[in-house]
Image 1: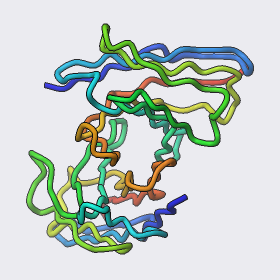
Image 2: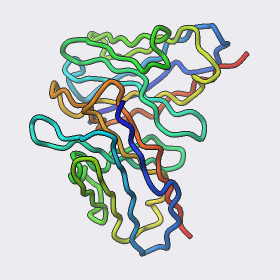
Image 3: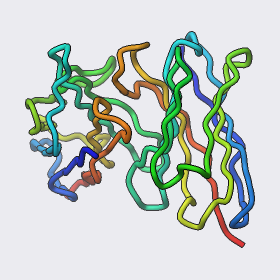
Image 4: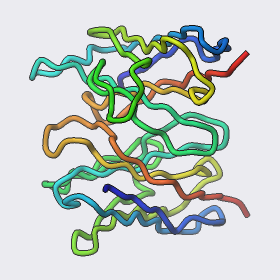
Length: 113
Length: 122
């Protein structure tokens, strides 16, 4: 099974400051088609998860450009350039290329200091 | 607009049975893989099961294999999860999720339902 490891698990941030979350996979997420399949989701308290980023760095429609994804192979990063109040919640990385099983990271809780 | 609406959750005793449903709309249901993902109280996301759109192939997490069955009715655009012999550790919010691209062999959940809570307790 592909293990997804996120860090940190808790991230207190100041409004307007940057934030960064790391996700590492135990196996390469590079597909035979040449693309790398790593997704990021955001879950606000009491809500369903929402996809933010797909294939490492592609933002979903409506996702603010303060969110960016980067990385390759097994090491990936989600960055928020300037944290806003609506960004609180839990962020998950996910791989769906080497399945079953489909696997998620443990989640990183972002809160405002 | 893609919509996924789960139903069927509730209180179920250990060893009982329950069927969850997910009504889908806004896309060609038969063409896309669909999945169930759960979240135990205060915990992270855990993949449970998937059914591939075109082939109907099914896959399960080891934790539910042999107890849960995923299926679909393409005439009613509905996804199901039959839960048999549930255990206390199956208590969770169950989400259905749609795959982003049809037939590419990669799972990528671009839409999620609002979830339905299943509580396993006597």
